[in-house]
Image (cartoon, rainbow over all chains, first blue to last red; front, side, top):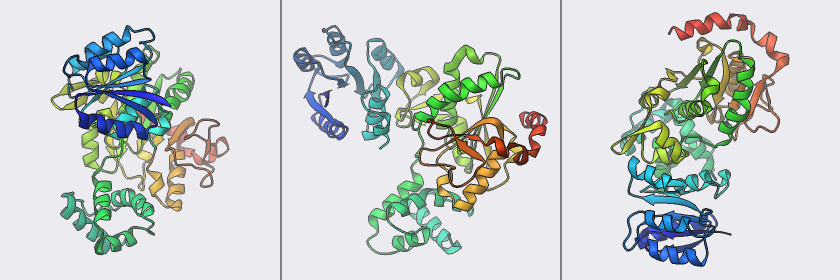
Length: 128
Length: 293
């Protein structure tokens, strides 16, 4: 089973994301900020990270930089999921190593599409 | 659908969604509500109307309104047809048309533009290979409103996140507030025409590639056969027809044959070609006429 780490300071968003991702057959772990997410990644890297940008302690962009420098840290697919919906932020995320980018609000279809886009789930599953 | 049923549905949609259908949108209603009726285990539009009129139809009312107002199309829908387009269709067309360096593509259910613009993006990604080529994408749809939206090429944040890789969004769209508009260069690649597939479409000329996805499923068998046979007259003998994932010509017509191991991809049948396409020799002048429209 593939693993996905959901990083968001809103417990409601984490809960919604968890439900969607479990529906897509992911084993989900949660973190409420970048620092806690990094701790989890140091133990074991997930296959995917669904990543908020603005969070207390350590934001999503900074977390991604640290995670990418861990041994094997280039492997997880990072999908930003944030209210930052402008070109400047998207460009920054992509050049910083993000694989995909979701502008909130999101739903199951968007997550499935984006996860299929980066090869985390088969294309057919996104359209099922 | 009987006229009273249609009138009922018109009023129903006006009351429930503000959607104001003109007197000739039977096709639109059928294309959206027949699948819903099937899913609900009903025999057709007639029975659906009866159910909607009955008490306790709340969930069905909501589904019917959503089916009529939700836009089901998205960028690179189903992915596979666009892989075929890039990996199978275009390489063959580039070779076959190397002499005249032109390719004509018809999106027969162009809707709000996601399909024709997805093709335009695929072509842009091919870059220098198409240098000096004349590429025409004709998008047709029954609904003028839908075509206007396609022409404008403006999409909500929700729409640009369905099927469109983020890199493509960054490359081919411009953000304006909460919406995203496809670049003028890509918009210029697509021409729009209002068209009912039930009517004669020979005036569109001959095409190398026809995308006709997820529209014929809503017609009865006889109509489907009629449309397939007329499509065969508008396609070059070595052209390609692309159907939706759940559609096929098999058992309906011998005008097209499936391409092996390419789901949804069809070629006109050689055997039929000479008899079925007497107008083919006139294809070139007809094309010129279309270009001048």
